[in-house]
Structure formats: C-alpha cells, structure tokens
Image (cartoon, rainbow, N blue to C red):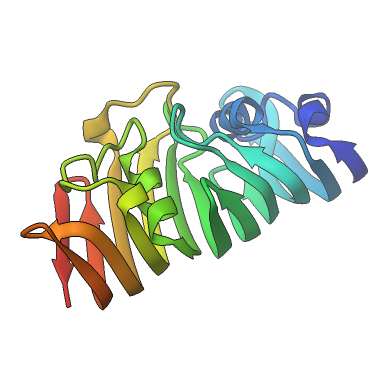
Length: 219
C-alpha cells in the first residue's frame, strides 16, 4: 500500500515484473506530481516457469503530474487521474489537466497488451480552450496537421470544445504512420483575419474533424 509518494520515485515501488511494458512507459513519460492511495493485490500459482504471478490487481491516484505522451508534442501538465492495472492492461481515468493553453476536462487512457512488445496506448480526452491554442497544438511536431491552412493561429480567435482520440505503440519514437488520430471539434465565435479572398471570417460556428489523413471543415 502506498499512502503518498512522488511520481518520480514510483520505480522504487513498482516491481519490474508487474505489467513491464506499461511500467516502462509510465516511468519514462510521467514525472512530477504525487501518487497516493496505491494498492496492489498479487496472486501466485504454477506456470511453465515455475511459481509465478498469475493474478494482479492494482490502483493508484495521481495529481499534479506531467505526461510527456509523444515527444516532441507539448506534454500534458498538472494532470489528475486515477489508475487501475492488471497483468495485461493499465487504465487511467483522467480528471483534468492542461496542454498548450487548452484545458483537459476529462477522458481516459488505456495501455493495452501491457506485456506485449510494444504495448499500445489508446487515449481519449475532452478539451476546451481557444482556437489559436487548438491550432497551435495540432500544428506541433510530430503531428503538423494544420500547417497548410493558409493562415496562422495568431490570426484567429474563437472558442473550441473538442474530443481527441490518439492511438500509438508505446515506443520511444513511433513513426507518424503508426499514429492514429481523430479529433472532432465544435468551434464558436470564430474569427480568421484575411482568410476569404483577403477578407475576414467573423462570428462563425463550424465543425472541424481531423485525422492523420487530413482535415475537413463544415458549417
């Protein structure tokens, strides 16, 4: 049982044989903040290797954590979440956080096939913020999805509420082709300077859908 410990010290308390793929990623990509209410239940039994761990159930709460989910993309900061894990998976219920000027209002992250090489991350988050912040995030490396819009994020105004799904293998440097991204965003009070034949777009509402293949705009 862990009452309260720094996230940067989790390696001391997380045995290397417990969900090793997920452990490697968590220890390499989570930093700062505190972990609390940690609990692990183990079951042992005969296996082909002799007596080994055959059952695992664990949970952990974290707060104030930084999540560097895909460098060099901007990390999530000041995140709060509850974590549950077993031998094959790790599920994170996200309470909140912030990234690149956007507020994360909730979501989940699942590390699937935690004993596989490599395991996979399936991330779903809900975010709110400004249009410039959202466009800046989508333009960041390694994504670069909004670089060819023809206008700069600083030429825009407005508000956005979005849902983001990201799937990728948990390796140090996944190829862009291995990353699956889907973003659905509702934009209100949109302003874009000089976007339409040199004129401004003002007061608009639209739907923005982005995948790794491109972007569509409607409304």
